[in-house]
Length: 147
Image (cartoon, rainbow, N blue to C red; front, side, top):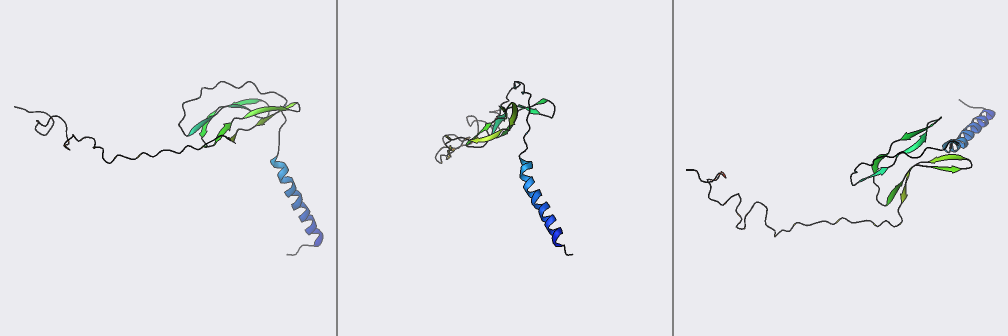
């Protein structure tokens, strides 16, 4: 199938117009004139050492603000979580989504490895190397002498 020269130009123009419009679609911002309410109080649960808390925030659902509850997320060494926030600019409010921010003063902590002492006696052995419990006068079943 061969295309005529004018048809090729039209298809090429449409392709270039679509490619030029794609980046513009990726940068959509919504201007909201209604300020978000004050953040709601949330109880932060006890977190595992490898988790951090991302606090809740007000999101816009098209006609009003709705509360999005906080949640735990995996920790990233050398970073801190900057929570979602609203900024007022040019008479409107813009939500800035939460993101990881590099900690400038971060110094990695190396975990120390502990070696077992080879000369330390094993648990369950007395000073003579004997296993067991009691004073050694029983019948071997740990119940003492029975008459």
